[in-house]
Amino acid sequence: MMNSARRTERRTDLLAAGATAVTVVLWASAFVSIRSAGDAYSPGALALGRLVSGALVLGAICAVRRAGWPPRAAWRGIAVSGVLWFGFYMVVLNWGEQQVDAGTAALVVNIGPILIALLGARLLGDAMPPRLLAGMAVSFAGAVAVGLSMSGEGGSSVLGVVLCLLAAFGYAGGVVAQKPALGRATALQVTTFGCVIGTVVCLPFAGQLVHEAADAPVSATLNMVYLGVFPTALAFTTWAYALARTTASRMGATTYAVPALVVLMSWLALGEVPGLLTLAGGLLCLAGVAVSRSRPRTSQTGEPEVTREPEAGQGAEAGQDLTAPGPDREVGPRAG
Image 1 (cartoon, one colour):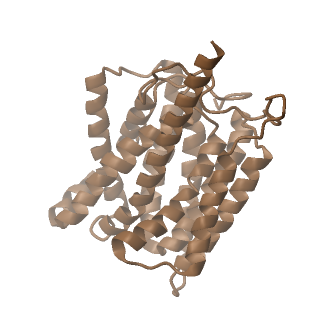
Image 2 (tube, one colour):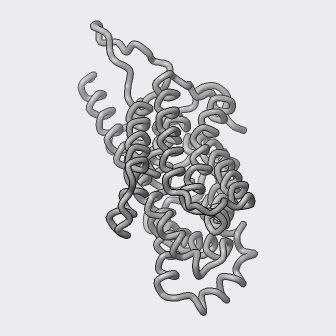
Image 3 (cartoon, rainbow, N blue to C red):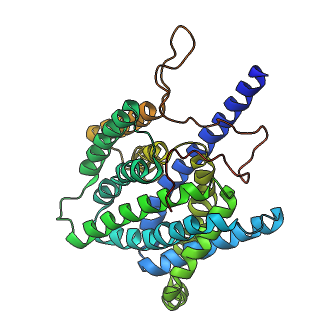
């Protein structure tokens, strides 16, 4: 019985780790696509086009799988995450990246995981063990190094920095609001209806989208559709699946791997050879993520030395997939 439970836990751990990896890689690729599509589309139009593409794909999957409507108890978290993360975050991030260089944007937005940890501890009762705090500190130092190394020589726009800061707050608030909903609804339901709500929030930009799409090059439009199908529909679903099986703080810390992957993708796809500071910063980001997601050592009796943070996979049933509701990982009061 114990062996079966351990096998189930290991399998769920592997699935959650795989879902996290898919999310991080696709979100890293989104930075390149946003920069490319942003030359032809305004921030609001790009966000709406991305969300419409994502909502269509997610809606089709829900119809095929007969996912149904989320339970009533999940709607508050879905609505808040839809407004803050799918709607507000995408618009202000697109706008911010048109005002400042990619390095500055990445640096400012990467305060998001810190905000998630603070909000998660305050609103969800998430534990903040030393390994998580140490890993976040190392990763943030790496993000600072990457941001400084990628920043252009020109002065950064104050408006752009403020917009990226607002994006970080929207991202953090959306993640913390989404966490309770995932204890009551499936990852597919939470992502689909959050994306739909974000689409509704961005409908005022419909006129801009229609006008700009008529003149935009095919490559920019394809980048916009790519953003909707992969970094939104797929990556947000895999993110929700993994978030349901761990704490918001730990999941937030994994996104520190994004700057390192952006550097690698720019190197491979665009031929932009990174400098030593950029490489060192990327390695620090990855090292910090490894530390934050590592488990405590076990004692000679086989018991963990520290058991203050719930681990992914506890209580999960065998055979769970990306559309199965995850176990509620909250400790203490729920957000709302």
